[in-house]
Structure formats: C-alpha cells, structure tokens
Amino acid sequence: MTAIYNPRAAKKATNLSVNSDLLQQAKELKINLSQSLEEYLTQKIIEKKSQEWLLQNQDAINDYNERVSGRGVFSDGLRRF
Image 1 (tube, helix red, strand yellow):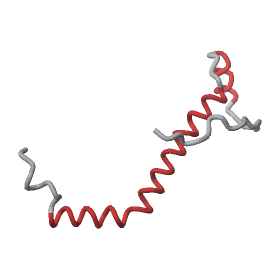
Image 2: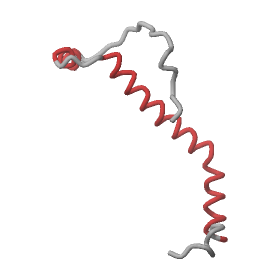
Image 3: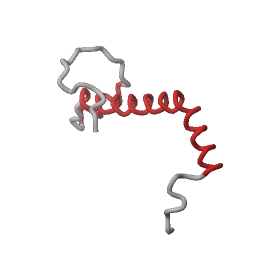
Image 4: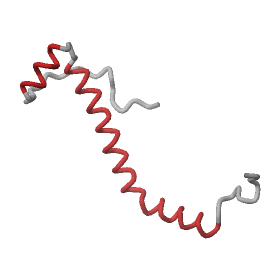
C-alpha cells in the first residue's frame, strides 16, 4: 500500500486545545499524543480523499453501472456459477 504521507518528514511543534479530562487520562495511561494524532489524521485523510474520489468519479461509476445493467459484463457467457 502506498503511504498517505511521508513518515520521514520533519516533525513540527504545534499547539492544540484538548479537553483537560481527556488529556489527564491519556497521560495516566501513557498514551503517546503525537502518535495517536498522526494515526487519527491518517484515517481522516484517507476517508476525506475517498469521499472526494467518489464525488469526482460518480458520473463514470453511474455510466459503468448502467452499461453493466444493460449489457452485462464481458464474462457473462463464461461464468459457470
């Protein structure tokens, strides 16, 4: 699978506002906030890019589905199931 971002890119310090109770619990449980945020952001980026791809390609997907509904797929005569 292709990386969604460059894991070797330099780290950049940033300021965030986090619910104090969540922050305290995370510290008590020794949760790495930077790693957790990177994992979460990776998933959100994948979701957003997937949604954008679907929107950009919706017409082609609809056309393909109409064609398959009307004509079938190339292997219809070859399948035995």
